[in-house]
Image (cartoon, rainbow, N blue to C red):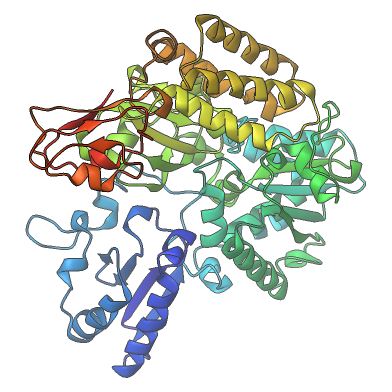
Length: 597
């Protein structure tokens, strides 16, 4: 029996910041101080507050140490774990009350509006220990399903819950399962999981796999029972080594405990699970391309119909959901569909996990009830925009989504509301932008990604997205015309209507949404030959105010192209023909004499 438990984040973010070395040093220090038998060290998944990593939490006091370094570990051991004195300089300030007492994490701004279902075990248990998952009622839902419920009962439960796919389209999960069960009676069927997660800035599924892999295994087995499948595949990108390793450990443990394989819970139901690695192709997030890749072929989409529920993997009926969708299933079975449907909005039930990134203080993972406003996410949970900057827009849905402008800052985020304003939920990436972001440049960034990731199978996507990018590039370089803006919009609608799969059909969304809400920025680039945000280099011009310049020569010394001249203690001048617009001079000027326009 341990008197203290030290939880150290072992998610990708904290691991990249050195948490593995912190764990090693921590164990060494505990051994030196004779505390190995008294203090347990638990490597967990992501806690969500990625901006504060590496993270260490000491229980039972629930002291939250942030940005821990290896040099801090001996002090934590000697002071806190040996003498009972909290190392205050490392404590996350929001977990300390005005009286100096430690507050629960649940009372911090970041956590208090969250409701964790998919992420319930992330940062709480050791994902490599099946017994810790079982200790949180793990595999109880699977046991209930195979011993007390019929496949129809399971599907009705999921239908009544209102759960919709968390991977982008928002198709009702129960309806998908029902189709796979009923369209083709009997025979081989498959359950697949999309853990490819290709959106820039999205890491929800990765974090669930790293922090709670057994939840996915249990849910996929439940899906297999519901539709009559005995085999499942998790398609996960090879760039997620920690997730892949922990998922494989979890699969091996589940088989060892008889929770995967033959005759699960003595019910006669058998289900096995395998991992298939993706090579990082964004198009393989599309369901038919994903299945084509699992089959060993080049990942390209297939025409639909027939849909996967009728003819999917290896031509057999197949259910495909993403990791987050599956992570909700065991809790719906255990707590009932009414419990889940009581959260969220009329047509969007439950919670949604978002990966917060961009111009925001608390970058990381959050899980909130559907219908939470964008303002609450950015200002309260996310801690606001740094440096006193103003909110300009938020991009949801990645390359397939659109921008939400400041005028919709109070929008209740659910599937239908976001689609109504030209965006979409997507898998859950949420990139916050401030006044320093150029919306034309943002559209160009996502188009460049889409051009690179197009599989090339259909002409509208293969050629159309390239033409879109070329027009955007022309505009950002100051060579665009008003006719180009009209052509841009026309081409967007053509690509949407004629592309083969969802990648091409949604590729124009970032362009269309920025044209809708920020057309004035496009016009400024074309007519005034200026980038209002000062981002597009070809439209920038750096100048030195002679009244503010002190002639310190710092700007001239840092200029990489010798574009700045002037004598000591006299105003300097920038040669615009030589200037490469790197901004080094403006960054180093202590007197605010250099500006860009």
